[in-house]
Length: 127
Image (cartoon, rainbow, N blue to C red; front, side, top):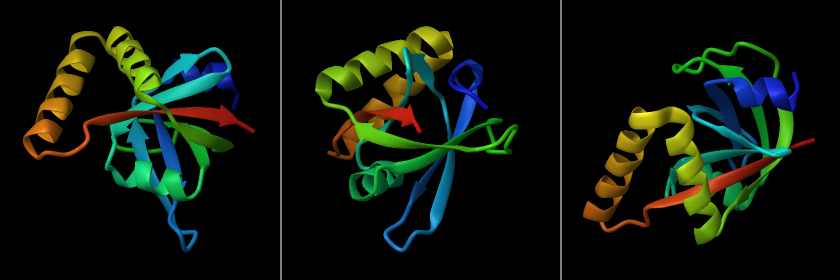
């Protein structure tokens, strides 16, 4: 599995790790950005919290339900600043079209209603 194949996938399984080392896999949308992958999520999501504690991740192509379609590759994840998050959201919207725009709008609206931080971009460098 290589970056080009992962970048062409509609979904990837992003596996993050709890403090005790337990893996937690989540299917997510992605965009390829040069030699990295980018993912968008809620700032208070479990995956964002786990990345704050441990930036090690694995990624693999999958379907919308998380069923793997290839082998996993290790990587390092970084939570992006506001500018990086805005850029990631724009890339996701562009790649996934109207569905992407609707999804991001709905996620932001729900977070604002709950008084939570809205979103964060995640950059993944493969090892």
